[in-house]
Length: 607
Image (cartoon, rainbow, N blue to C red; front, side, top):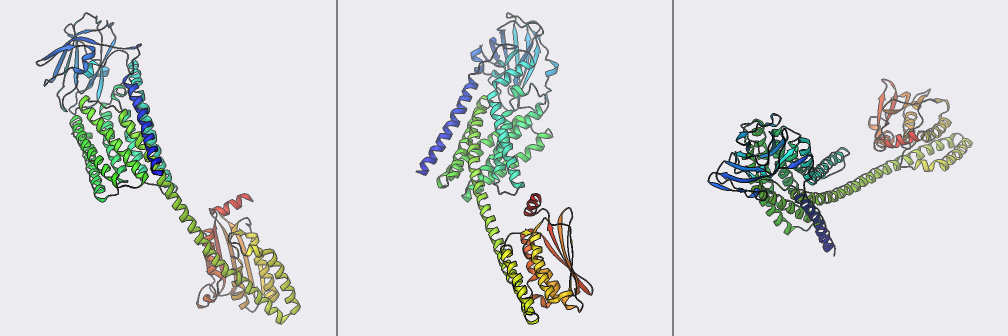
């Protein structure tokens, strides 16, 4: 049932995209030019090309043959009078033309003269002349040359089908209106391509796992959009640099197949077919590498190079289509099958565009845009699915990591909790031998403390510094009852509003008393201070007792203290603990808590 629904979805999507672009092609083909500031110009008469002659009429422009001759001459009359000074536009596609009226050649407009560079340009271009007052009965002669110059036979009917009278801006507006659907499709493709590439960069920046297929698909769309956008019939009216337009067109065509092969290779699992597509990819990359310097330094001929690349693209598409067809038979994954199907449709569209170009010397473009748009929709669906799966796996891995950290914290906390209670009970035991009533008082005081603070002692999350100081004060109070004036305490608390792990200061204070201060006959002083700078909050516990063996040396193995605190500060806060020793006496423990910690920041902002 699921397979049937999947196949129906794919078929419905393909039909919708096919109908949409078929309607766009139909609208483009049936577009009727509006008369106004720019008018179509027709010529009727005869043509002569070598030994071939024939009649010229509006309906027969596309059937004019030049045979094996490099030139063709059309003689006849225009369909209307052309007032003096009116601008006549001729579209030249890989050839040159001259217009004579009553035997006198009309000079070309100097603002639209295209130099005959030794590097031949493949794209079309507009040329204009100014009417010298042409009447309908004047004898008009159009001489077309360069039909067989580098790159093969040209179609002279393109010129006769693109004669206009008017101004340059109106002609541009007309050609843009005729190409409006193609231009709209090109901008959609370009936007989608840039969106995919930007999405990949964003996901990489925030360290979310994303498939590199985004890059290939985005590049394919961007290259397809640029290629579709460059229509010489309107763009040469606003951009005079044919050389740059030629390079952009050819390079975008080369990049289309490059990114397409890169994209499709991600979905080919069979090793031999994968290697074959990889080799095709390397061949195409080599062609691009050869093209760039030859073209930029004026060595390569555009038309010849375009012919070679067109032929290579045709065979590469055929081979890639065959690989995908074979790969599709062995695939089980629904997403991969959809991508393979859409890839075959796109390759088929490209093949049809190449065949059409070989016969008409022009691309349909809309057919390619339709195939590319369908492939993109399927590709985005597949990539989004893969990205969602990766994010889910990453989320689960992150959850497992957090659970592991919580497990480590629980172990560390389970060590420090009984350690704290054990040490308090040792103090009470000592008081029982010295002062029974004081011992009873201490037991009552400790019981009340546990009743109010047991939740705090068992917390796996960070607690406010104020709560931690309550633990410290209870412990100090108990130890003072035992050692009396031998323990002196100084506090310099400049910062209160921050969080830290429970029982992180008390063990350090305990170590200072048990292994530092009480080892001196007259006792000593414990100093607890806090302050902050731009990057961190600092807690410092120092004493002037004897050299503290709990921090280094063989005896440290019997004490949990500092190691436990160090690990929890690192795991729970991303902080660090530093220990400093005096030359003869005293120990200083410094806890560094970064302000960038999210829990501390939110607590601080909420105070």
